[in-house]
Every structure is written in structure tokens, then in C-alpha cells.
Image (tube, rainbow, N blue to C red; front, side):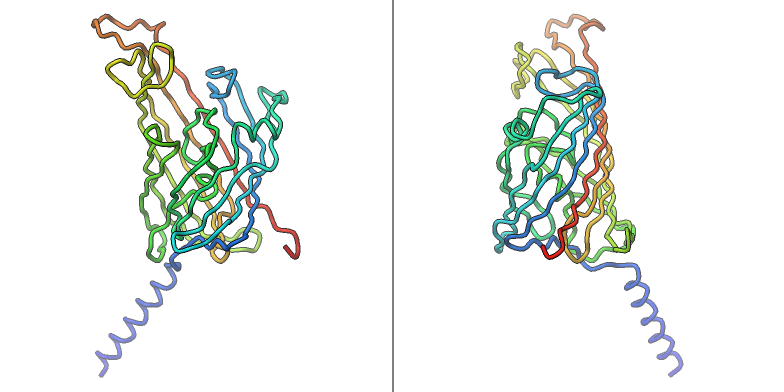
Length: 293
């Protein structure tokens, strides 16, 4: 009898310990007609990928308000529309002449389907005029920013890790990046408890350009090659009951070198190489809803 009681107590202790270290399976819980707003600040430093100044060294700060609206919810997930509501930019400390209308012409409203665990599909829209492909900041579809994590279909335990792959861009030119996620536990912010996730990524880059400096997938006829690495971290907080992103802090770096392809075997001179670096720091914060909204 004593042995049975000891085993029962041990079993109860194990169950209690597991309960303390785990959280329920997280799901995004979008409801039809739901609208969310986020304030975002993105700082880019280095060789900037902006129209009219591509490759120019400097600093660009983007301040924006983004929205995410749930149009429909069915067995495939939530169909959402994302876009800009406010936008301004500062280039090297001076206002950059890009208003909201011009910004929306470059970054138009986009649609996507979000699965309950965060898998994205049906990504459509986006102007594609800004050639920036850093995970966590893909301006061609803001759903990749506001739904930044795919969660496992299992309860979360402290220190649990998993991986998922995201496509940034469209079609065959999309950049597919593996992100490594880790559950850091529950963290209280201003009296509310949030699920905290950290994500890291490191991705080699290899792209090709033709003789006119245009992207090409034909390696045999390419005139130039760009190689590099991008890597970074994301710290994310999710509201466990509302099932949405509360805050994101993103840091990323891109280092790459472009040089000509010489099929005659001749040496590439130092002056023929172009090296560029780009650092990104971004914060995204969910806006509080007005009372009664």
C-alpha cells in the first residue's frame, strides 16, 4: 500500500510539474470582421534599397501605421487584408518626400490566408518596387510581419524549439528562409501576461544579374553574381487569449558582395567588386482599441 501511495504521489508531482512548465497550444484566433492596428518603426542603415537611391549609403527611418482586417473565416483559415494607414519617412535626418498615397502605390493593400497555427498561403498583392528581402520585414505583404510565427500543434513548454520555413517574395524569385523558434515562457507587460517567442535565422544569398544589371535565373548567361549572408533575431510577444501579435522587436543584418562572372578565367580585380551592408532594426506594437470598440 505504501508503494502504491508513493507511486501515486510521484505521478501527481510529475503532472503538476508538467502543468507548471507548459502552456496550451497557441492558435491565432481571428474573427470575421476583426480589425487590428499596429504602429511600426523601421530603421535601415547602410546601402539602402530605395527607388532612386538604390545602393546609396545612409539612414532611412520609416514610421507607419498598419492595419489587418479579417474578411472571412472558414475551414481553410482566416482571409485577411493588410495595408498602410499612415506613413512618413526620414532620410539622413531630413523628411523624405513620400506621403501615404505614394507609399500605398508602392506598397498596396495585400491579402493572405492565415491558418490557425500561423501558416500563410495565398499571398497576393504588394508592389515589389522595394527590393528588400529580410525576414520579418517583407513590404510586399504585411501579413508576413503581423503573423510572424508558425506555432507547433502541441502544447508549449519552456525552452521548446521548432523550425518552419517562410517564403518572402513571389513565385520562383521568392526567398525561402528557415526560422528557428524558441518558447521563452510567459512574460508580464503592463499587467498583462504574454507568450514570448524568440526567432533566429541565418540565410546564405546567391543571386544573378544579366548584362543590364537585371535579376536573372539563367546562370549560364548571367554577367554578375551576388553572394552574401543575412541573419538576425526576432523577439515576439503574443496575447494568449486574443490570439494575435502584441509586439515584435526585429534586428537583422545583410552583407553581400557583387562581382562580374569571367568565363575566360581572368582574375577579378578589387575595383570590380561591390560590397554592401544593410542593418535593420524594427519595432511593431499593437495599438490599443478605443473603449467600446
